[in-house]
Figure 1: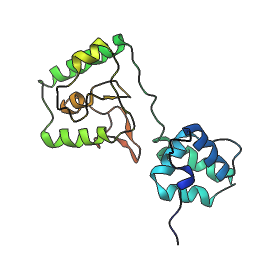
Figure 2: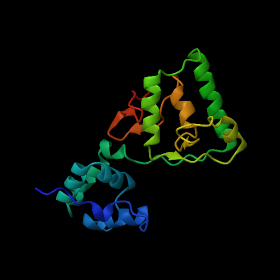
Figure 3: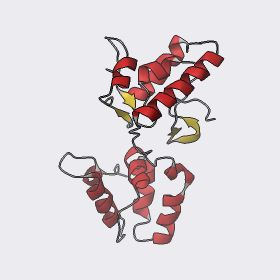
Length: 185
């Protein structure tokens, strides 16, 4: 059996995400675009894409795949663009949690695992241009180049280093864990 060719739906600079969702919907015999989570999972999981194509035109079966919890884990969290007030409140809560932990830092192994996950995450984004983000920006030589988590607004190198913190997003492959591979709370 030949490997599944997903090239018509791969991300391409010339095609928008919504156009890709619509094209994949047409490919599956649907009149509407596939949900965002479905396309994300299909791009990440070749077996899932194969099953979807196997049930082309069978809306009852496709709907089951679309509604599956494993598929819903791929739903993109909206990119957080918090106000300065919201970011300050988040920072204050993180500082309080850190204080309760005795200002414990993550071990170097945990920090590296977390940071690696953040650097490969689709929610990693440029920091907002604000006074607060400049004040909290990590130092020169930061591997994440000052980028922040789009889900919570935190500088990733700072957040990954605090033992008391956790990733706010579920792992798409295992919703019982965060994208850092740690147990969800």
